[in-house]
Image (cartoon, rainbow, N blue to C red; front, side):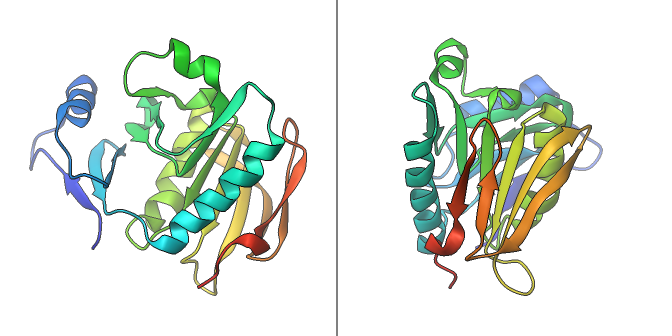
Length: 197
């Protein structure tokens, strides 16, 4: 199954507040990921087992290495209104204090220390193009793209140093490489723990 979109139709555009209200108040299919990407509500099917294994293994590594007042969240919405987006990263690392003070279903994306997206066939284009631009625009310091569906085989790309809508590539490699997350993390993730198939 591929991602579905909710579009107001030809000649119409959603107001941001109306779009967010629709996103928050609609009874979406259980288990699906519902995001706003480039001003369009996108509904993606639940991820495959390998996707979930990568997320769980990476979360375990991050949990062991981050400061005590930071947490790893799997279903936290992060907003990027300047890019018409509310994304739900596969993993997001941020201080618990951010969530304690944020009203609503999402927090400003710029509050994240790290976001991780793991591609699925239905969302790979968004994870490679739209979301990095949004995360960079919001000032998220680090974006880790785990691309299981990359041409030529599974890859891992770490982006950093955001400027405008663009990141600098800090690391690009294949599954099995070690990816060093710079300060404030300052540790390496062994991507050999990810299932490649």
